[in-house]
Image (cartoon, rainbow, N blue to C red; front, side):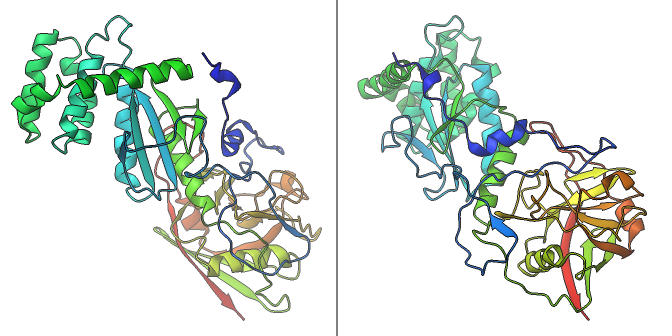
Length: 416
């Protein structure tokens, strides 16, 4: 039996979950950005003092897996070209498997075009309290013969508490009723559950899972790689968001789209009103150019103010909404000693250290002189501080349930 611990491969982007911020005083500081993925090609001329992120990309859904490849024998739901594939080894009578199944149902609803689910049976028939696990698996495959696999799959998990403690005889009666509710032929379902090919299919799945050395259920692979992290909706939602962000990232730095000799304003439209920003292109030409480039490309449209810390700052600029995303490149700090965090409404780039600016930025609620020299100041609020102060507090932490947050609806650039 293989020792799967030797084969466990974690996603590169999951490593960011354990990186803490380089925190200037006071403690509330912009959260770190780390490079999760680089995927699509968006050719743009290179700008000096800016570099694209060179890293091993997060595995794509088509990458080779440590486990048997998906075949016609697998139960698959979702588009074959989905950005994210979840392969789920589960037991219909296992409560943690049911919890994950409910999470995946919600994720399927949120990402119908971007998520593919594959379920493989691993009925823990040798465990106490799992004596109906194999029967439930038989029922799901019998339902597949009537085109109702996923309906039965979902019902078995959603209603697990109804049937889990029943006797096998009563469970069969429950299945008959459930088949009727799902517009199936109950008698045919019962007959098909006894088919030798179905019984062997479930048995073979159990044997293969044991040969691989699975420790139990649920066991999850994301894009072919073992995932041993948090299985909550928020945690998996953030992972999918980061994978999808990879499809939007750039592979080189933005071309120069501004004239540093001109004046630039930005109007940030939110659900509470507008925030007008005056930029400092002479002091921070790379940062201003970066913001204008991304704004004109629609990068900032419809994204969340993912971190709002009352009395300190509001932070946004990450389309994934996790606070971990970036545009696929970093550029250097531009520190102008004449500019200071000495008042409310200062707009600056978020970073995780010197020369790691990307797309995220923050606007201060008050003077924070301890930030001087550490973050690139590239703008100042002209109007809309009151709008900024109405943003809902939010501090993203991986795996925790978060409020939805306020949305940056649109950014309009004005050149004068």
